[in-house]
Image (cartoon, rainbow, N blue to C red; front, side, top):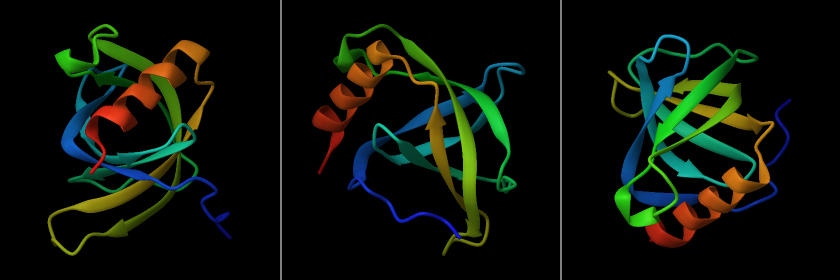
Length: 112
């Protein structure tokens, strides 16, 4: 059973591209984020439990560099309302304090 979210997620006004660090291929776009997790939309489903190394491009407005790196573990995956898209929930792993500050900046900058 998936643990209930403890922090309210913030929807982003701009979907950020997320890449697999090993292949440098885009794996999805971030829809929402907290310092503990994120939701990605993707064309292919992720398997619950899968851990991958992420790279996320940052918008210039954040002013904290051009990208951040972190690991993420898939907690769940389901078909979106759009039949061509999957919604995937991820737990962020081993996020540095610097990257937490970047994520907090993203939340402040892009929240509705």
